[in-house]
Length: 287
Ligand code: AMP
Image (cartoon, rainbow, N blue to C red):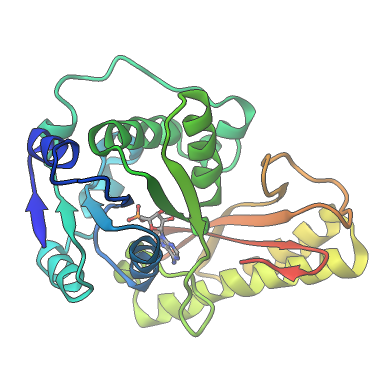
């Protein structure tokens, strides 16, 4: 396993003869790796000749200083997991390798960038789009793998790739969950056992909303029932619960049989911000 810290070195490695027409799959992460990340890596390994995992806690996508400061960092453990998985290349730059100077460019993704995460984490998608553009330009991956747990991020990156004519194919990977239904997340490491149990209510709320939508079809009522269910738990503070069309992220008023729908949620448990979603259509849950 080759570990690169320097942007120049990894760029010249991947642009030199050593790439040799091999297909490169990129898995961008912020480290504190868990089984959700590992499932992305397995997809990348199956579909490419070389797998690159980046580990970089990108400061420009954090709108909350304290969240950035407390974001879990477990580099040694991460490197061991990647070695065990037989990953080819790890890219672990520091801030000065990624941000040579203060970025002047900013991204505006229109309405889809202003709802949900965009509303509650202003500047978040600008930071995500910046770092992903940099990684795509530096590494020139054939494919890049993103979790559908961050559905809005996935949809926005798809648009980024189209709008800037990147040649990288963006692949979405289903959400990996604990047995309790809790979506795996690096931030879960900061929850107590009790907190984890409460947090599993988030997935239950998503299932409840889905069932109500299937039974009755009215979005407003379904959302209300989901909110009430979460309100019953004292240690959960809901930020948003939305039903959107899964590809456009436009809000949905009525469920129609041909629509792929996502129920998306953000909530705090023990002051840790968690997000999750489920995607389904008339045939059943897609992920
Ligand atoms: P992060 O390190 O949190 O930035 O996540 C890196 C990538 O892993 C992103 O594309 C996430 O959507 C994805 N990811 C995070 N958690 C999960 C999960 N539970 N299942 C699948 N993918 C995930």
